[in-house]
Image 1 (tube, helix red, strand yellow):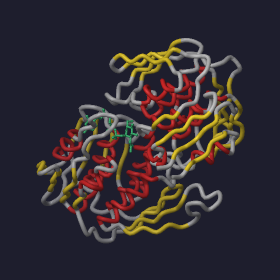
Image 2 (cartoon, helix red, strand yellow):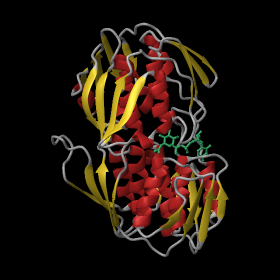
Image 3 (cartoon, rainbow, N blue to C red):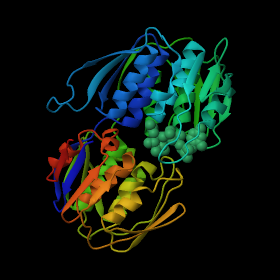
Image 4 (cartoon, protein in one colour):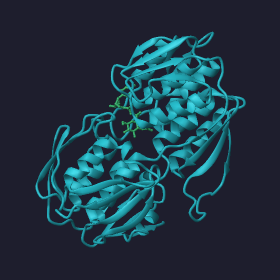
Length: 429
Ligand code: UD1
């Protein structure tokens, strides 16, 4: 298993290109199941999760081809991939595939909408909490699906097709919003989703579905209206920039000092994180084609943060911000409200010398003057990158193991940081 070794102490200076958003790419790829035409996605990041979903979609009968630059071709950030689900050959998503990636459960929406049936394994346990699928099931039932749970599978049928309805999500769920929006595009009549997620990735999916012929309004607000159509066509769509990758590198620069321009992204994608970083002592300003980040010269200030659905502070940046707060000139608190078990990085940050106390969903981080390098273990995708951020300023060597977590969501991390002056290398074994 690969490890990443970082020798801390260098400032970051230069340019970091931001990749297409993983969390938009996955539902966009799944949307290809809705049409027998070709859906072309541009700016697709090269990530383990994307490869895994390609395999899962292939199992259902989706053909794909890649044009443009490929993995390991110089400057090949962002690929164009064509997905064609001419014939759906299998409406079952088996346990061994779904258990590897929760988002693959989302195929249930398009399969049910187009084929009127789907058998999808329950995703199973997940490191960052129980993450049930009750809202998906409730919502699809509201659209007329008959759903049973049989031997670990969600077995869904919609004889004659789904039917539009008004459905209020009991809790804001990004995945359930994606799935219900996709399912409703081919339902008979109008669907109104209330208390829908407002994440930019929801808007991106709605934009793509609209280009495919869907009738959707209100994406990006908490009420989304979808007028069902008989069929969807192919389209060409460019994946929006990854706001979590953007925020991660902005936090890395706030941690190390230096001056970095993040290209191909926008401050508009992460308003609360940008405002929080400014309070913590970073200057984050829009520039042509991106964002410039540097310290304001006053050190790192403690800032209290509560994670919330968009436009609040993203849970996916919580671990990275905690890493930053380990070096603040005072004590900060971080409250996690989205997932009940998303503090596994605390123990690992402590190995680097961080002082963090946990009480339920609240972490209190007492800033320390220095961190010291140590071997640490990645526990999940965002937690693993928080260890990298800490390692960038820790004295000596930090070695992060289990970096397959990082590879799920960060494209060429060591290359992007290395080009800006970080001493970072991947050790393959
Ligand atoms: C997506 C993101 C993930 C991010 C999360 C929250 C992708 C691929 N993943 O995950 O990176 O951390 O949004 O911003 O886009 N819930 C239920 N019942 C359900 C569905 C969800 O109780 O049926 C709960 C979850 O356990 C969690 C909360 O709702 O506590 C939010 O989860 P959700 O927004 O659905 O997260 P994901 O879509 O899985």
